[in-house]
Length: 269
Ligand code: HPA
Image (cartoon, rainbow, N blue to C red; front, side, top):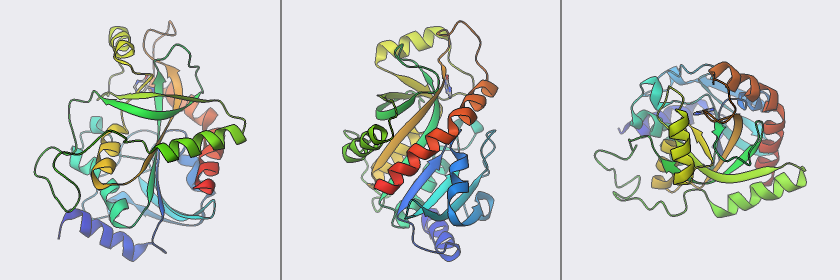
């Protein structure tokens, strides 16, 4: 059996239901899993073909249950390329979501603000991305049952879901920035020169995840909503050094509001 089928079969057996929505909870959003009713947790290490997640602040498990009246399957913690995982491992959960019948995927992340109009703590709706990771999860043999060899990327971030997120933000009285997310391999942060270059290229935020997952979702025809929490202004913009601790501190501080926002979106989906 293909690895996606093996993993999906395992989850089908261990989940209480067929999930309708999938969420990847990045830094600051892990706490949303605690709001899931009748939660069932499945550590990634128990799922055939899944690697271990090692990033700080990432729990490394699936949490399934009811959220906002929907049957959701959440990744509490994700796989990053900088951890040493290969791209296929990063695409695998997305393909599993599709195989399980999910009708949409919400990708969330912590990101550095590149746009001068942004502030630390802002939320950003991802309208498009720039793949600056130098790698692509679709490289290698293509499985036509999953998607086409040459995958269209014209509308990776589903317009209807973008509109829905904007409506929910307005209803909750939240400022929702919009912009282009640039995926950087990491794990080092960017240099100030790189950030200036990325701004010239059209980036509004920069982070080390999301892009490969969004490409995999596009490939298999899974609608995507992408949301960033701006945890810091990118390198060289705030006149101070960057640290992973600062990212986690802001993510934790803004986490509860971000969670309420995402919960509102799930309810409306
Ligand atoms: N750069 C890259 N990734 C990030 C950042 C950043 O400034 N902040 C949070 N994730």
